[in-house]
Length: 332
Image (tube, rainbow, N blue to C red):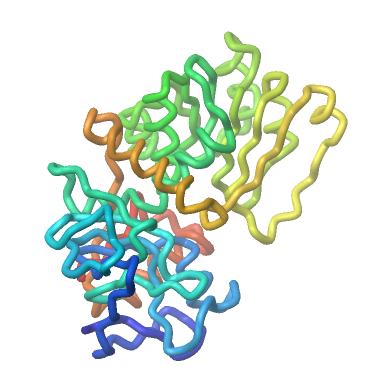
């Protein structure tokens, strides 16, 4: 099969697209013919060596996939040949990556694709959707009627947080920069959209949450969080969710934090168990069938052009070029 492999960490041009042996299907695994994969910020960290590479070289990276089952192991119970499936959590901890024509996936990490969902949407919503579900419902314990702020509402995860929170009955406040991104955030369902560049942002956040006495959940997507501002606009017993900012060492005002009974919760999707992620995926499938969310797709590249896809992701994640809205897909 054809795959994009790396022989060592490096810049985006380190990828080599070549023929490699097709994976074998283990007893509890399904062999998936991949239609689309996706690129996530964490993929660029592994490729560059910013995070220790999770397996021996040569290495196939890629977390997300959507495609069709071509073979099932003898102990597989949830899938059969011909099923359309999607999933994430691959390319890590010894699991094979998805920048390839095929991948062998343990069935516990795969989910049925709803009948009318495209493979593009399934791949684009995989990692970002499960991340948003884990943060809102497992860690954030979101309840209907609460008020959620998501810092950066048109990014991959932020756009999912808006849609899932609205579907759960929350009021959603978010930030965006350019006018077209503010419009997109409103189309996703945000009740209030603020310009993150505003010099009066803290006051505007207070005004936006005044009727509820502050935010129940503050979802931070940025690599450099402003925790003093977040803490001062939270409702008592509010929850601050952190899932970015690996190198950040922000100022932390302890007094206002503890006297308001606040909680700060950091999480990484890859720490969640297969059962927890499956719960998220099944909820996502149900919500999608009810028309309650849709991923934003930014650009699509071929497998042969995966280096350009990684360059675009890295430019936006680290370089903050603001040239991307939505997920980067790889058509296999």
